[in-house]
Length: 450
Image (cartoon, rainbow, N blue to C red):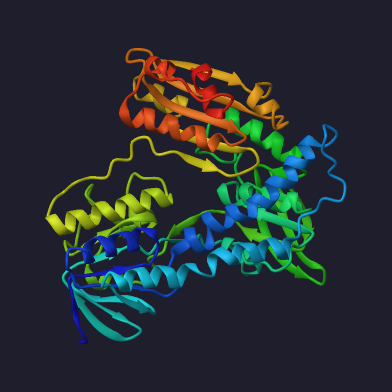
């Protein structure tokens, strides 16, 4: 056995790095390991690079919307290789920067495959290590698909590293990945199709706003196929043929690329959790509310690898990592606070949610007032020539507090943060209306939405 640690963190994403630095600051001997470059999905293969690419799509879309109103969009195109080079200008520097921060804080860094060999033991590429505690923060990985030719698909990591963008792309799955990437690719000139096996994509979001987004998606030239199952993907001389079944009617789509956007699962399969007596399920490592394993007290879990009530979001992973670290340091059982955490689908325009959906609020026994507003003709929307925008605010009539806020519109991902803060602090609509915002800003619309 080579060494003994106070804590070994598995996964050098945002949750793992936050916990490792926090515990090292207390003088602990901390190790962290990852098979992939340090930084995790968000910084390297997800949120951050995606939004850099989206900026190019935003500019193209903005020019299209303003065409004929003082802007001439003729000749404006998106140079995909140049945009990808800009993305790499950010992502290429992340791993070294993250590792330097860790080592500077006294954390021992490892690169390799980790798997448990006992209650307090693991190996990293065959070398044994012992630790008093472990934090599993290994994130998530694309869900395994079982149709014929599933191996022909690329995942989100592959899409975000494409040197050239094919002319035709099929996205399988009706969630974040498919919609966000299709909105980027379509503005870059690709012919995009989203295939969803259900009747309503983006099921975590308000159904009325989702329908508005789908209409806007189709206006952008993206086909959305619902109630459609992929039965096979076959390589052809020109690319791929995607065989589909739509409520009993079969067909096929010829395309240059097929992208996996059908969900992710906790990345635990190769860790040999059974060797350490760590229980897990489809949603991740089984943990108590304070993030400690229900079956091995030496183990904690955070982020997408943990079965917690939190959404699979980077900010959630970060505060779970910090809470887990604090509980390990202090021997406490503090639970993360998931109140008022917003989430966004970064399409163009973007779809946002914080708090409860209508049916959830009613199901929880609240007497509610629902304020739905079509904001497509409001000044803030008119200014940027967007055609689709709306808001739905769910208010508890007894307390006057906001239970849920659902926004679709340009830059509404900024406005949703105010609603998130209001829900977290229990502010009433009367208190929100009493605030005076700078004008004309998107934030100045808030009072009128209530």
